[in-house]
Length: 163
Image 1 (tube, rainbow, N blue to C red):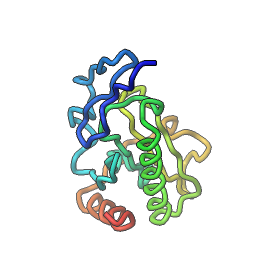
Image 2: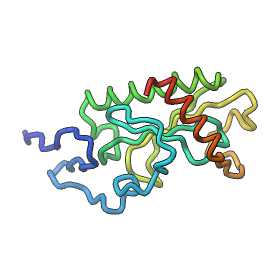
Image 3: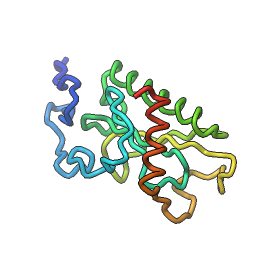
Image 4: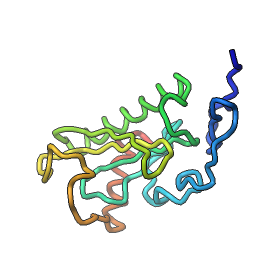
């Protein structure tokens, strides 16, 4: 049996290793390079993830949790790190529930467009124009928040998270 050659969990964006102990190429990863999400949308460092408000707030409260290190699949994470990540996703969902009183919260882990593990946590409110559709299927104009509204929303979410 091959020894586990995965690096320890760290706060940097060091990639995991593949089955044959080679690190995957991450120089093109938008998250590893720090190109996305927008730094001014940062909510809080939660431990193994960092939470950001999504740029598009058409669905108010839409939050993205980005894993601090590069990984693309859940099975790449050791069980303890995966558990901590899910606890952080749940913690953000509870904060969004308290702030927005949604009918439902959607959780999305895709990675097709940005192959770096990140969770979308999306409150679906009572006035949702398409409550039975995935957010990706709802045609809408991007809703960017003005600076004051962004600051208010970040402060409210941080307060709920105790961050």
